[in-house]
Image 1 (tube, helix red, strand yellow):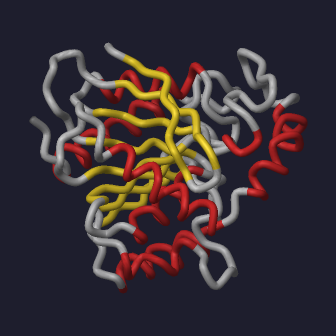
Image 2 (spheres, helix red, strand yellow; image 1 turned 120 degrees about the vertical axis):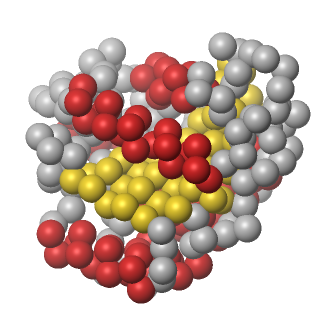
Image 3 (cartoon, one colour; image 1 turned 90 degrees about the horizontal axis):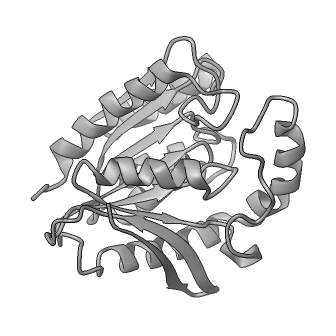
Length: 249
């Protein structure tokens, strides 16, 4: 499986990124993979490689590039329950600095870069994300409805907020098919209902599903939250979504 370490030109500098794609000399649909709060690391690089093995060019940018190359803080090989709050406290300045304006500028750069790679098919792309990456995938789809045909978010955070530009308020701009795979503690029932109502009102082809027995972070095998059956269900939902929406050569 070929992989590359890349530099993506943005309006604020160069974003380091990891890419994986099939080793067959053909062009394949592009997938923009938005990281979780812990950032680009071996766990997510392996996720990108596995997805690429199903016939996709997967681009995994370091969202914290303005603060340095990944990893921006030292991470343990295993993120246990006890150390998680300390790590999140150290990462929070980077998370809070990643404003909606920066998200949208970066999305322009990431999509422009992804769709011009020689290994990428000229058709539509997908935006997927984990944790904080899920609302970024939705924002990207809303800002680029002519390019993004699929959105998937797993153990998402901040999909429904009180902010005027809350991601769930953007769904009227989305044309993509959407799947959100929630843990049992990601969102309140009221927030899930508000999200579903917004998707229904916009006429989106979507599914939201609470994965049983899971907690936030369940797809990440390098954390205490990992749930193997939750990860399997994630693949069972993600791969058919991409197969329906992207032109796979």
